[in-house]
Image (cartoon, one colour):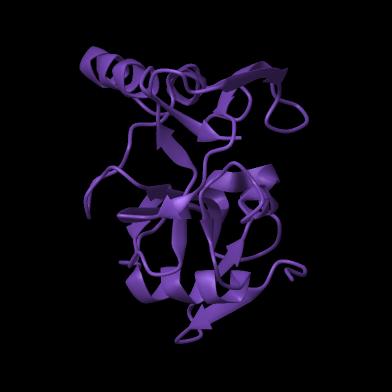
Length: 187
């Protein structure tokens, strides 16, 4: 269904591509996903992107066609833990998923894009921006986002492999810990 990275252009001035890291986000994965083509996703991001020079940008897009892989835990929920890296070159960590859950339509969606400059050696081509993640939330409202996992926050904060430098407050870390102690990805 999905081929090589597809590139779209808006006004022939900005190119958006889908980074291979994002392509793990499919209907059969534990991650949020878009029920359309990668080219459709790139066009959707372009249509809702306010131009920026470089960095990491969260682009709010309409929820149609997006599904969240996050579920709220309840007593008796069966969980599975795995010690694995997200991708080659990153440190493994404990990843917990809920067994038997179903993805639900998103109530809020942010597509995370990185500029070519920010991606540096991880850029997959010459596009100005690359989509690296679909953050579809079942619990947040439009314009909001679920907090990153505490592991992702630590990876970013400490700039370790797989992280992009970000600063977080103690309150943001605490909120993420509370949220992810009551939610998990669907396995």
